[in-house]
Image (cartoon, rainbow, N blue to C red; front, side, top):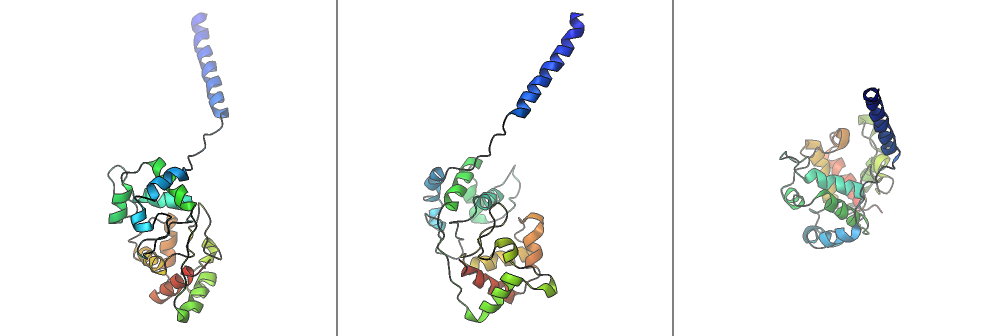
Length: 216
């Protein structure tokens, strides 16, 4: 009789334990510590992006005020996982990101996201109208969607979904659009940006990039 009862008791005990674990509140994902991120960001990252993430060199993007989720994704995409080629290839960034663990990347993302961006200005008056049209309305004739549809009317983006682009260097935005167009950058979910960029001419890319730089 005891032998028959033992399996039943064990099964009941396991069920109770399983239910108890199921009822435990899920552990919140680590969001990063901005203070810890500052120690890294204001020293190691500062050479290219400045201590507060407001780069003054167009080749190095502004990180200040960017979505923490977007920053974290880009940094993890620069890392090589299990010896495989990173999702996003950049000789400098691949090497810079390599030593940091996941927690440190979240700390960095939290720090730069908390900084205030110092924006740029639109420089080419001749293309402002075209840039504004593409940003606000797209080009329905060739299926080009409005940038504002995802990035918002001021280019502030939607945290965890679409990055802030307003106030970024025009040269950097142009480079990224052309990289998506040529697929030398391919870490966009569902090929979203590649499908947009492929429909744009060089003139349109330059015009909208300049317009975006001046957004606030």
